Image (cartoon, rainbow, N blue to C red; front, side, top):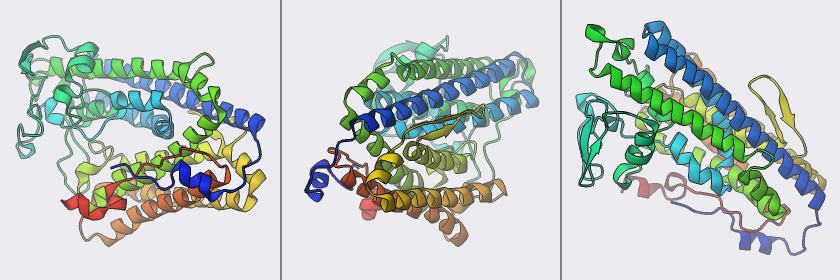
Length: 422
């Protein structure tokens, strides 16, 4: 479903004269970008370790309070991570890794028990209702699998994307989210998943069966998330591969920045994460569907795009990471265009902020997706339209800076809506 707003060859044709050299400035801009990436992944790691401690406490002494503490830690962990998603597009090292930590949507029946309305195995996914927590022995691709011990290696190397099916998400934030909240069975009504704390309890108090294995799975997934984030944070350090690749070719580095901004704004967020769910009126298309945290996911994704352009990020401890920015490069060439994109980014954040405020006041994102809910549609489309509009200005920045090979990811929901229903 990839399309391109503006391909590199078209960009070159739009600018007859070669753009002036910004060699030193580009190096400074890329350094800021790498510093912000490092800070975001370090913050993601810090908050994931807090989640890890909360999960350990829940498993050691299950209670309603311990489950709530783990849920709050998960929500807090999403804030810096969502702001990092802008680094995925354009940086192959991130894109190749991202599916381990943030893949969605998932067939949650692979992991644990589900409601009868969920259904069972399908032609698309024979493992959709495997329930590995209840089944320590099963067959995969004709091979007997011993899952008596639920470990990070089992999740990563055997279960994740088993049989080559992307919906078999066994690792990352959303697998953890499902284990903490359970299914959201409210449809387009208000309310998130409501897994009882007794799903982690011992003995006769245990609900849902196999509570010890459920705890094992939750711990394995959380430990794996921490180790994955440790690895990615290191890639953006002074000697890391992500930083060295970025800095090795300044023009390619600027291309990566603009590709990330445009692709997250347009195809991924405006299209796949927002417009598609509204077209289908389907709460299963929510990004954080079990916890009803999608309003925050959208908000912090948008903020991540703005971070990159302005060259600034506020860390979880309040520290500001900032420096030379794309905005500086653009302003030197065309101050009006810089003001235009700054303004559009701010307008998008206002639109995403309205979604966030409404959800926090009780009008949940599920409800906004309901067919015929005009107020909800207006809120969601406000965000979609803002993201599309800012991408048009990102196109103009690509042309101004005469950057080759910027390919902005598309979405059928925006580029070919009729295909969505075929």
